[in-house]
Amino acid sequence: MIKFLPTPLRSFLLLILLFFATACTKTQLKDDHPAHQAEGKPNILFILVDDLGWSDLGYSGSTFHETPNIDQLAFQGMHFTNAYAASPVCSPTRASIMTGKHPARLNLTDWIPGRQSKDNLARFFKIMPPDFEQQLPHDEMTIAEALKEVGYHAGFFGKWHLGKEGSWPEDHGFDINKGGWEKGAPYYRKYNKNTDTWHGESGFFSPYKNPRLDDGPEGEYLTDRLADETIKFIRQKREQPFFAFLSFYTVHNPLHGKQALVDKYVAKAKRLKLDKVSPFDEKKTRMNRPDPGIWKERTIQSNAEYAAMVESLDQNVGRVLDAIKNLGLDKNTVIIFTSDNGGLSTSEGSATTNYPLRAGKGWLYEGGIREPTIVKWPGVTPLNSVCDTPVNSADFYPTILSMAGSKPSSSQAIDGVDISPLLANPRETDDRAHFWHYPHYSNQGGMPGAAVRLGNFKLIEFFEDQRVELYDLAADLGETQDLSAVMPEKSNELLALLRAWQKGVGARLPRER
Image 1 (cartoon, helix red, strand yellow):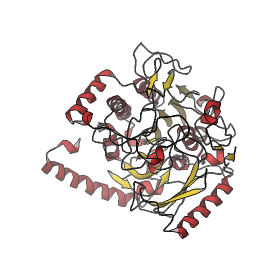
Image 2 (tube, rainbow, N blue to C red):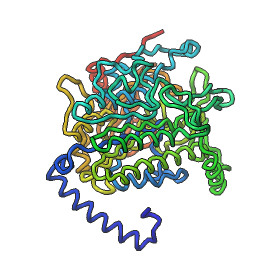
Image 3 (cartoon, rainbow, N blue to C red):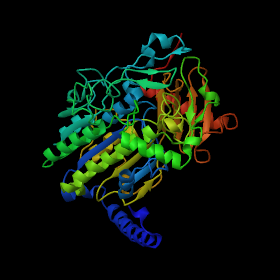
């Protein structure tokens, strides 16, 4: 990579690349969709990672994890600094990507089947979360179905977690499904809250015990296998436009890394003396919860098993991208890379930190919803470009259809917007509000609530007591200074905006016990 070259040569190359990037941008502003006209409909590879945090990658700030292939992808395309998941947990975000709608409009607002389904936990709730859909509704047109209408072949590889049999990828427009079923993680037995460890079988190593993925040779690694299946699909369908949805199960629990990589990061942690530093902060008041659980927030990245999983992810992203290039498809294949929620930082092992963001998966703070996101659209995205405009996961649906020369049906109530103009010209526009509705208690310590961001201001409402918190993200990215008491007019403005939006989408609220 360029960053490993000697400083003078590196500076010279970066100047050359900047010149071409600028020239490319000026050309693209003349035509929103030059790739359509030059080469027809682009192929689309959508890479969704499970539980990957905003700070987990080299290009986004990690100095412990090693991700050269994803960093290179960021250099080749555009990365977003304010990209958001539609929810702080997985199933709602995945439903939003599939439909272009907000989870509240779909009434699919928690991971399936949800925490309140467990009676032994619900007794601790102060308020009762609303019931929600247990599968992706069949009357929703998915992105796969919409693309098939304009000539695409659609393949799904990996985690689905949007319903039981009868509501799997092949039931929602995908021609091929390898690995997608009702479970949200590879097979394992259970989590022991007393020892904060996972005890199970198989997990990321074959046999997988997955009804939609044949077992490989004993010891085969699931992340490798999903990349293999994706490459096979791309090779078979290269003569027609394809939509490949590579939905890695990694880096979700259970933590199962390849031993050689785990050993590598154990040694790295020792070399950096990270093994001598306590990685957790257990004193924060937001960790206090009435129900059972170990709530502790990780503040440094030093988990060798997790780092090994991140590197395996990176290696397999590189393998798929290399296959696309070797097949001569790289000039007409869009690559989209993102995550479904923040990194796991406050419970269940607290494998990573999202610092400087606050909290992580399961929380409406930035660490739970802000995601690493990269788009490479050959001929459109300027080289090594950065977009600071806030976007969210519902935007992928109309944007992908636009790339394919199509658009959502007029009968669809789409919440996302087509961000393809930003991909050519990453100007900053903050006039759109972004909303979150999570009326549930999360496994990670998060409380029922909702949030809205408009410009640099973000408001969070907590449903137990209708308390609000207000943050200026431009001045306080870590959400450490609640401004609600000193800026009551701004708080009231955003709260009114949030309430109006909730009414408009039919968001369901918790009820008193």
